[in-house]
Figure 1: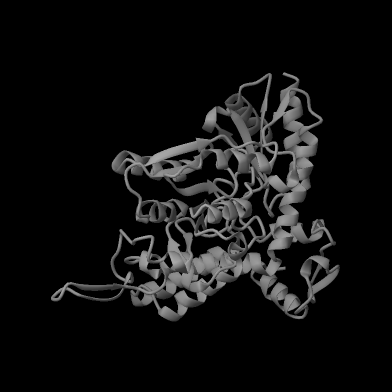
Figure 2 (figure 1 turned 120 degrees about the horizontal axis):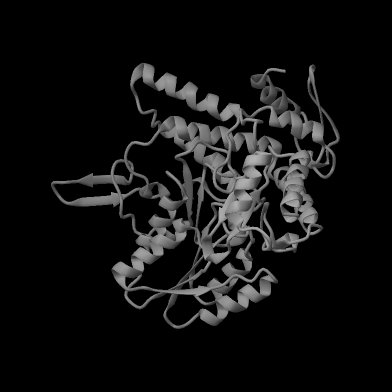
Length: 429
């Protein structure tokens, strides 16, 4: 079956199932020449094998670094190339209001927010900087964050500390229990605390922090709550409205499978007058007048957008969101959870392995981090890459010196077994 036909058939099949949860559907015919079986646990291998064919991702190695960079499917690549060709024929930006509005509606449906609260960014780091630098913080104000921050959520706060004299207060995430992390945060709150800024899932161990409970704590203490969601959007099934945070930044190029150079920022409506737009330009304003000095920012989160961006890239991000939404996020997460659970279970049976990720499924993402007692982590990474053709990610942050394996919908249980085979061999060395 041709790859371009796949999602036309899939879309048609799903349309016929309006109102029926896809995850509970068994024998789903999506076209005359395609039959997809998706069982109740979203682990039907015929479906996922068929889905894997929609990616140009090489089979010469096993790709296990979605936490760093996600692979895009053909439908995304085609959307980018097609729109680029269209715009270059007429040399236009393609910044039409109707297009951008429709793309933001897709994001709103995926993340559980309103389109007027969505900002298009170049990556999660840009979104983090918008929030970090736009908040009205002064010398001595305190920010609570973790010791396991990605550089993208560490350097912006460190830079503001250096520039403006704010104070960072850190806690070490406990992988034992969510209540322990809530206690660690609570112990850091003082009269000078203004904001809690944490990752939805840590880039180091893949630990999912209790963000809904942290949001409730922040609200009770009259604090702002910001989430670095680079490691969860496109993997976990959640709603920002349900979580209750003030702002949330994520990347388009990881679990969302979008083009590189795309990101998203959510800023809740009531925060638009609080987080000041600092980098501004065309599209940031509703109106301006150089003669009178008048400037009125755009009434929506568009106020944080500025200048010419690549329309083809964001059309591609829209195509990536369509891709995931047709599968449905509960099915995506069920698949990712099943793969990561199988890997974790296998690791527990291997000697010399220390698992650093949480064992509790409710506190774990699809990223599993581990280290070995008998081999240094970079040597292990090289061994697995050279002999088993595995692309993993070394974790030197927070002094973990470990290896991280990310599982997403284009991976398989055969690949789980291949990684475990390599780890078993390394354990004997």
